[in-house]
Length: 423
Ligand code: GDP
Ligand code: IMO
Ligand code: MG
Image (cartoon, rainbow, N blue to C red; front, side, top):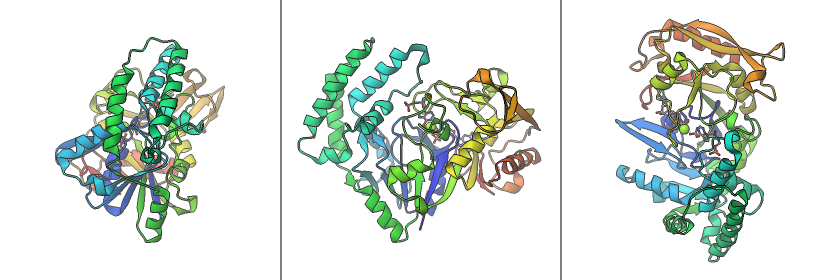
């Protein structure tokens, strides 16, 4: 039995939450392997829209077990808000939502450090979601972090105090003007930790490997996107974890030879929220139309997402790094009515035409080279069969499959669970 992976191939918000929810019925276990509440994974069904942050997107299927892996960072305060949001759905999360003891805890001072660091950077800021992700992973790799398993120990608050005091000194060092009431934040945090402790903490690597042995299929859910990967993304404008396939091995404790299918998910165009290079970004009416029709606003911060054409150079790179075996194309419906579509197939870089992602993709170095396609006018959102898709969309899909040499097995034509076409 294998672990299949589902991960984003662009700069996040590709629609991972929707597809994990759609695929969950094929799996016993859904496991998040990295990131934290910087993620916002949207699911829609039965007229309800729900955004998950840390909780895996299989949670609405009562028969699935949802595991938060060791690679994830958890903010108890956000987590409790997520649990409260689930109350209306009558889910038994005390039995079907379990947390790795090795996952790290986001402290209130991690959030403050994130804010202080970003403020001190001025114009060069990353555009972080300010959820404390970077500082928490820094403490993890710096071997100072507090893990979920520590919360079961009697003296964990001593460790907390020592770390929080150190963080306060670091915040002072930044010497920036951020307003906060740490006492209030701590009260909320300690209350949330008590709620969190009502859930099951486990040695998740053992649990997952035993599940595989007993023939239970697992789907690993990624957060963010490949171009936000700490190693392979557009550094330093990235997040602080490995969002690519290898992150699933380290973030869950499953060996590479246990990985089965790798579902790579991408939008039919490109978006990015936060700072950093984006070669195919549009600054005209077409980009504004994509943002408006696609409702391109961040699920976590509400910030407008930057929009642009599909970038096959970046997509090819992401497929390679991840070993993608199947592609899922999202939001094709948003492009209905665009007269001409463009796809970037190569970059002009230092006078040369290249098809790989160079070290530095700052806009001034790169001119995208586009292939143009005729658009379609049909509304896709009610279509349920591949045979209904318009010819121009099929031409677009055929071109992408040929260029990437990977089949597009799912075409999503709307945010709802049911608006999903298998090919
Ligand atoms: P994630 O972070 O990868 O899970 O993606 P987000 O939830 O942040 O952003 C994807 C957005 O697109 C959400 O608002 C989804 O409801 C929406 N969405 C997903 N698939 C489709 C689709 O095929 N068409 C349209 N129009 N919206 C979609
Ligand atoms: P999902 O899982 C889109 C971006 C932020 C910022 C950079 C670093 O919903 O796809 P961080 O808070 O990690 O320090 O921010 O990464 N970012 C995301 N963009 N979707 C996400 O998650 C993101 N998580 C972080 O905007 O540019
Ligand atoms: Mg999102």
